[in-house]
Length: 367
Ligand SMILES: Nc1ncnc2c1ncn2[C@@H]1O[C@H](COP(=O)(O)OP(=O)(O)OP(=O)(O)O)[C@@H](O)[C@H]1O
Picture 1: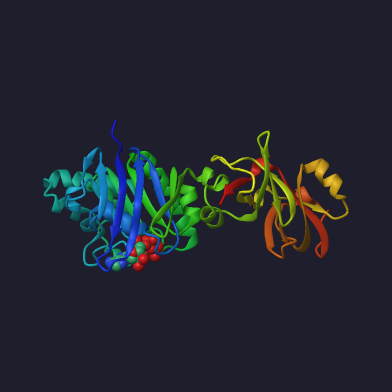
Picture 2: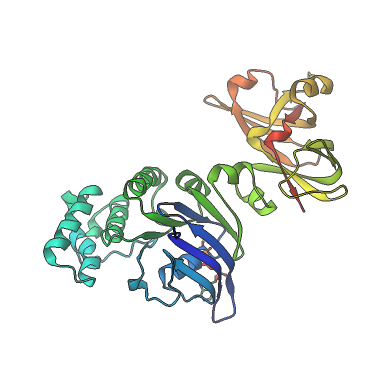
């Protein structure tokens, strides 16, 4: 069966010579929720606009359900796009805004009315159908934009930072609605966002982009626990990177010489050889902080071979969560959050301690 959407070696060079997107490859199944995540200017919006047909494609093939659509006009594509500012017509009522796309398609009036009623009802907009959008809240306007895009029954919905204009609380509640709606309708969603938490919460897979290139395509959890590049390790989650040189690779474990002494990691997916430079990616949630009143041998016995001395600089209790600030021997400051119960009263600010972790909770990236 054909994929719903395929980007094969897609590239975009703007007329002024800017290479905005470079060799982008992605296969999307029907009903998948895909997020494009990356820093400003990395090419997310350009890629989305190429899928919608608002931007020409310089190289590569764009396929929707197996057909090449590079040269198809936007309105001929089975896609619909929602913009950050919603682009609603202020002089039209909610109903007229939603009806607009069906009028363009010259749908018979009775059928168009039926479809509009159904989508207004689904999105809880029936009561405000005859109001102009300027009188409504950000959340309601967001729903109108969604209704307008969904009423034309696209195969693929393209969303460009659709929640960017909403405050944090509203954003959370609309995120949930969006996810439920997407599941319910079974439509493929491609979603552009700067916000890591949003991408992690909503998507089946996340495409992390950097300077026009795809860095990694993975489900959220894998992106979080198994970053494949230094860029992703720095961009996603709260990781500490420890660089070193491989001393040896033996029995499924890699030992490295690092500024903090010899440390152990699991081998990366790609092969790695003695003498190679590599970085251990250590997630904050994998770290255990132990008090300096324990000996290093005791810490090792309890938590395995990776133990690094630290200075505990700050402890702050926020409800059940203990925020711990530390300085590593490199001078690097690291902070992490742990359950207060786990640490009870064992740690003291201004004293020496240890950080220990299980090699299985880290990722090794060769450089
Ligand atoms: N019309 C244009 N002409 C020339 N260069 C452009 C044009 N639009 C975007 N660019 C450039 O292409 C690159 C990618 O831009 P794009 O808007 O796709 O990034 P983005 O990841 O969506 O950024 P943001 O998160 O800030 O919206 C940037 O260097 C940008 O300056």
